[in-house]
Length: 149
Image (tube, rainbow, N blue to C red; front, side):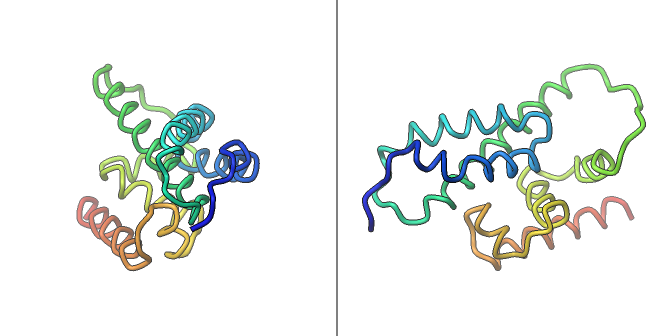
């Protein structure tokens, strides 16, 4: 159990990779997601008991914040009129495909098929075990197959 380093040294060390992670999860909203995630992390930082796995902790805070932003956007879209049909690129097609899934399943699939992470990498980002990450991806894929069959 090490001593906690200054918070901003963590931001300097991991900020760029966290922005990439937020961009993969949130697209154009990545900067807002990361800003909110860092504010959440800063508020929680004094309450941490040890300095173990701080990078993973920052990824988890960022992932959770991205999920929260996605939920908020979904509520806003559902409250508006249906969107006009548009031409989709590959990323938008994927997003449309996974839209019916819950937010956790969507994030698991993005990490696996967009970011091309192995299950250990997914587990680190989601704050779970490798087996749980594998199960989340498997369940999400099975749900998609059933819904589009």
